[in-house]
Image (cartoon, rainbow, N blue to C red):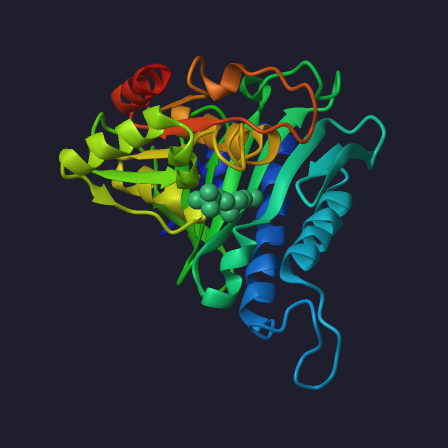
Length: 312
Ligand code: F6P
Ligand code: MN
């Protein structure tokens, strides 16, 4: 019999352990979470509006997205579990770290960084693959885990390692504790988050979809940050988010590897769906690291309906 007292809180590490996640993957997720704490600290302490130039003392400041990229890279190096990584900040090639290490990590270190000066919520996104066989030819369904952090008034981390999606909040002593286990999306629209809306100019079917949402009286919930916008849906358990092709962005603005793949993995684990208009985002073959894809993600039936309207 264990002499440990019943825990008064469930830490991220505890949850990973109790869910039967392998020790190596548990370590890596903990290491990434630590990186996220340093990113949130950088966001809180960098002089607003001055990132990328010099601060009030005349010291040079790295742009926050560049700094976040460096923070995450350091964490991945230190973990010794990462064979290779690709970052949205330098997405041209896979960079190697430790030969024979088990994982390849893909990440967007600071998504929505253009919202920083407005003090809106932003986030970091991660997908974890086994390193064997590289990335090209694999699909986001091959991820062994995915997670994101949303830096808002509070910092929240959501992960899935294939057994549901679970949310944790960062407490005052710097630990992630369980906020909500098994996030569950219902088949309800309620709110819509229509990205790349400029596409209505040359994609009439998107305008038609937009009009349907307006006529049906749904509520718009769109901040322009993919992380808080999808997080909103996952926490409320309802909604639809789109970023489809048209106008300046023929395939939409978002990237398969760094943004859409991890969110598709987490959302499908929460009972929602994702699609590029034809098939699940999880079934798109990775052909290059920088590949973009249209994305429709959220409540299952609505993903299907939007896909059908967009084909019309
Ligand atoms: O990474 C790009 C990003 O900032 C996402 O966070 C967000 O969902 C998207 O751009 C917003 O796109 P748009 O400006 O087309 O609505
Ligand atoms: Mn991004």
